[in-house]
Image (cartoon, rainbow, N blue to C red; front, side, top):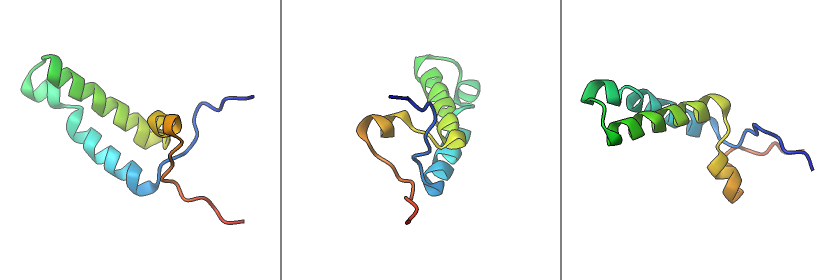
Length: 73
């Protein structure tokens, strides 16, 4: 069985929401100062940015979810 590393499983709306949230979360440690919570939020923003740019969410894959429309044949 071949494992595909990046499989698109997010809709365009889902990706846009993640991108907007990541734009606000990434600079949190710089604005509010570095502590455990702000660093966590900053790294969470980086993860959401990766998700939004790649269209792949590993949590969705783990639970077998997809917000991506399946093309009709």
